[in-house]
Image (cartoon, rainbow, N blue to C red; front, side, top):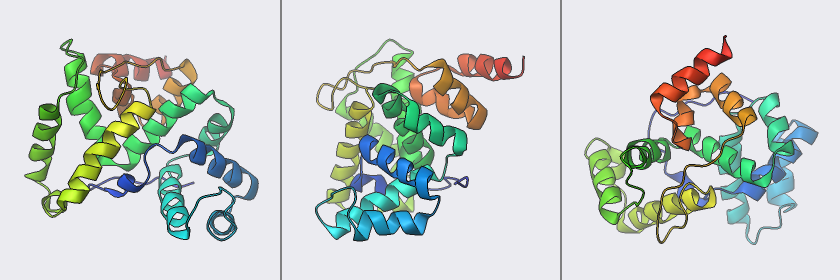
Length: 213
């Protein structure tokens, strides 16, 4: 699979959330067929994932395919063999690489609050973050109120589903346990994304140095 860069805010995650089970299923299909056209046919036309409508199948397949373009064979093997909790964290990593807004919210809000021993995310924290991003983004400036509401709803749902917060309602930050294997996979690929798991910059540097020790 190919590397995919994120240069602007993609908001398509509002139609998907973390999709842990679906990611695992499509990864299994990719492992078997190695052909996105075949997988697309199985998911959309044959409804192998048993989704209700064709539009839902197309939307979810598109998002999962986008996320999995970040992976290589080692990562594919990891997805298919890791525990359910590890897979949730890996899916958060995929989302952070695919959607700049999610990555920046985690790093600039959750991580900053965590390191100042402030573990509760307030509506005002989110509002300040979005206001700052909107000031420099034509895309965010032009979204509707409905999309704005959906953005907030899905971002917190993703954080809840990955266990980075206790719930979308109370929004208490939780630093997850990340296995050595997952830390190594991320560090070898794109170490800056370890920040999504609330690692400090100094910790990330030490992990990078350890790779070449």
